[in-house]
Length: 130
Length: 116
Image (cartoon, rainbow over all chains, first blue to last red):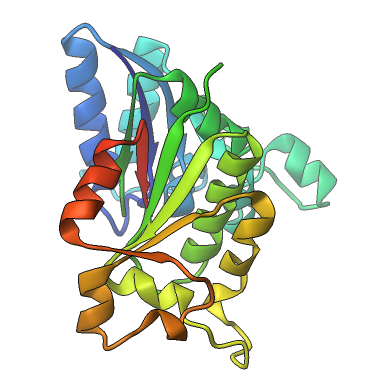
């Protein structure tokens, strides 16, 4: 089965990034595919390259980066939600004349249409609320 | 491509930062993609539909635009309304009021359900 996953919560205030990652790992382990993981609302904070976790503490953003790289899974981040929270791609930093960009690879800044596209294309669309 | 039935379920009250606005944006993009979008307000989510145009940050303002986007299927949870002492007269739209049983049927009929 082809899954799309939406995450709504930030790692600092919600379990949803961790729960979603466990779900994603289990899905791949069972032979399913993941069409796209969409980060919306506060979950866009996972794409902030400037966040530093204290040593020895869990780092869900790093875990997602590792998972996506290992399994070639797309991590899509809503542009409007990201701009609101100070997460800017190189293009956005240029467009809005900000001093720096801070999107962590392989997170990609995309339009909200990519969320709806995933909901249309995937066999199942699973949301992890904040 | 066949249009999918996408139901947005709003359970959070208004004034939670950008949450309500972002959920509305998501819903309108779904409608713009010509999907069969409907929206159900449950629990404290019903407060988002309260008709209070005098309030500077009236939460229902965005939802008033739903008919413009041809999102006509708007539902509220009967129990949530009763528990909060609300009648549909107090709401900005004229949603259909659904029992728990009707809500289960509504959800079962969807291709995708998106909570807020």
